[in-house]
Length: 143
Image 1 (cartoon, one colour):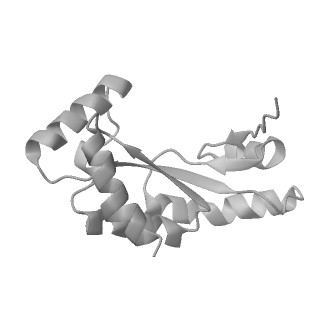
Image 2 (cartoon, rainbow, N blue to C red):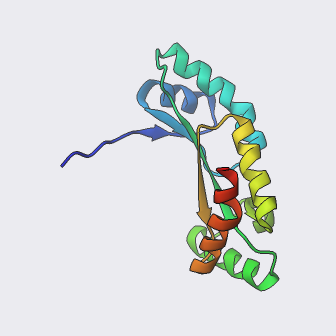
């Protein structure tokens, strides 16, 4: 078996950034939003450079739900609450939702923040919503 392994480290304190640069192969954000990521990425890149790492990808994640339907949004919130128990901010502030154009704007904001990789995590059990995400966001974003 030829398994590639990588250690991605995250955290927000300066010590966490230093640990990531020292021990990690890259950095990973949870879902704090593009604005916070943009403020932290320069320090992460500087720490990696100081550690002699020229290849140090920075990743982040965004919860997404391609819908404006209140019933669908409520179900997405239920799923995320089931996973976490509590949410650190209101569901609609935590999850990119709405039209494909709205979600594309969120993706572009994360790109502008300086991420190398963005993971989109659908907050739904509906495979049709995942198909819509691909059709309305990913295919257009790749154009």
